Image (cartoon, rainbow, N blue to C red; front, side, top):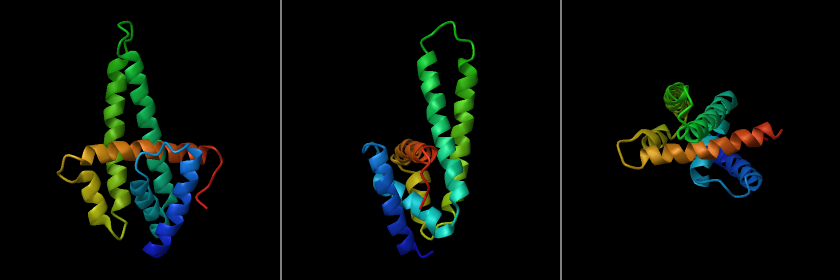
Amino acid sequence: MRIDQARVKASELVEKITVFSDTRLVDKSALKEIIAVMFECGNEPQLKELTFTAKYILGVLRGVDKLAGNPEVNNLQFLKNELADQIKKFASLLQNYLSLATEKEILLERYFGKHENAFANIQMLISDLEWVKMFFNDGNSVE
């Protein structure tokens, strides 16, 4: 699919997700670009793996936050290690996913460039991808 067509379809899908999330998306324009890559390259399974990993990361992070103040918890280090492993996995998945895009240099720079906003961009994307995962889990599809 051409990039202009992919962007239109991505905009439509992001609007549905925005409604679903009760307008809780952090960076809709970045999410549109990520979803446009899926439409452009036909790689829905990779997007779904990204969304799963994003949701899992946030779940582990919530667990770490919840257990951090409890001195009786013995598996906090396990959760921290799991979180680190999942963040590495997400970064690798995202790089591979973006490498398929027509505008890969721009997208890779946004998330992996040597600038102060790169990590914040990844954090916002993870948050928004969690909503995409919940949207899919609710029985919605990309169409």
